Length: 160
Image (tube, rainbow, N blue to C red):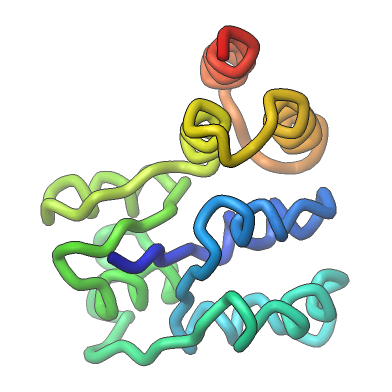
């Protein structure tokens, strides 16, 4: 099973200095060539962090098909490329509503970033304090999180 990660998850973690959480939890993750292009934009302040991780623990894979064909489902090219690369036993890390709906409709296993952090604490892959730090930093930054989800995650992590 591969873990395929969308650019929004990578960018959100890099912006709070916690990109390595993915390495801690999974050891290796996969992105498509399209997502690599999105995260390595020259103006990105996080490009250096991504360059260090790519080919070490972030692996770049190809996809087949045209991502534009999936835009009608409300996804951007990066999200669409994940679905074009995904195999039935892969798990996707997605936060955008349209991508999650598409994953569910197609029978893909997926989770969002907040659910991932909670699961990692429950599994002992992240310490409780680090899990709380990550969700707090995400909530204080520009990561979109509903209050109910934030409160649920905080409660679940503290209960662990």
